[in-house]
Image (cartoon, rainbow, N blue to C red; front, side):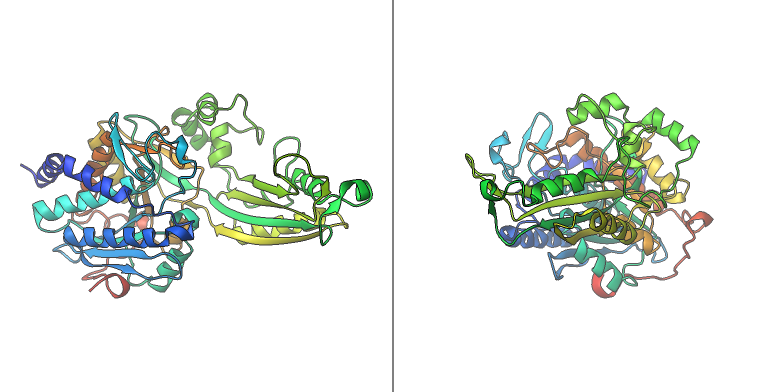
Length: 483
């Protein structure tokens, strides 16, 4: 029996245990956005470090940051000149507010109808765990791994990955890798393996308009003093034109055009307008004309108003003109847009459009560049072959409308990312009753195991000139991630 077949036999024999361990991981309410859960976030990090040590990783530990901790560990191949793979994932989760909307408690995971239900079961604990279980299988069957592996698992992905970007920059030599492997995205549908090759960037800001130093009586001053809520509504309305385009001057100047061939491919494999509308629960689409809804959400930029606050919102009536009004905005960016430039353009537009009766202030909340990877590299061919073998069907390649902060950071460090999603569109990520289909959990483990095995074959990366990555003889991960 071939070695890879023995590795896969191990994963099949231990399926029930793998699910029990994932269930234990999902029990941690590791909500990074809520300071009340800081201890839970740390406890989850400690559990992961101990689990990595139990499968044979060296130097598995919790690394302190200015925010939530990062878990790092190393597994070394017996041949040190083998490629290095950076396995990335995140253990923090979205809040699970409105617990009454959950069929079962969000942090009391349960298997139901072939899926594991619980907050983080899919985003991203379950998908991350596919790679850890693949590594375990290689260690138990072969005694080592086919490639050098650095595991890096963060606790702030859901709040922008600020600590991780600093950690990567400060430890760029220790974290040198030929490729990063991650799973934090969607499949096109059941039995349709999917590889993501582009992610949008994101900026986010909060603006506030202030008219007076206190709320005013609307009977005494209505019609004489400009209402900040009205001024804010008019200001926000100026962000788009009647055709759905963003009306900020210069916003589209750097947008990279998509080739006709790629647009034809996307039209063939990507969700059509009807599917996207159904997924959103909407009857009609909206946005920039001349593009499908999928193109608008992946290969074109967008600008959204995420929240508005002004005046009295309690029960009954209160006759006031509010002293201030605020809004949260975010823009999704595409190659080759630069976040700082877009922030400057947006700020300039808002300041210019603010009426003289108001004072405006703006605070930047998030800034992440977009990223796109080469589809025609050795690592992508290995990913394609691994997906096809595990799912019995060749994968499709898609763009992601969302933002994964680490992808652009790795791109800047010369590390291409392989993004293989195992979540289904109806797994309710970020919503109540989030779940992860266990069939995809197990196929994800098989995909990861095959991918690592293929990359471990001699010469796979060294003979691929497109990667432009030098062969690093005798390289050993060190410093912040080893010893």
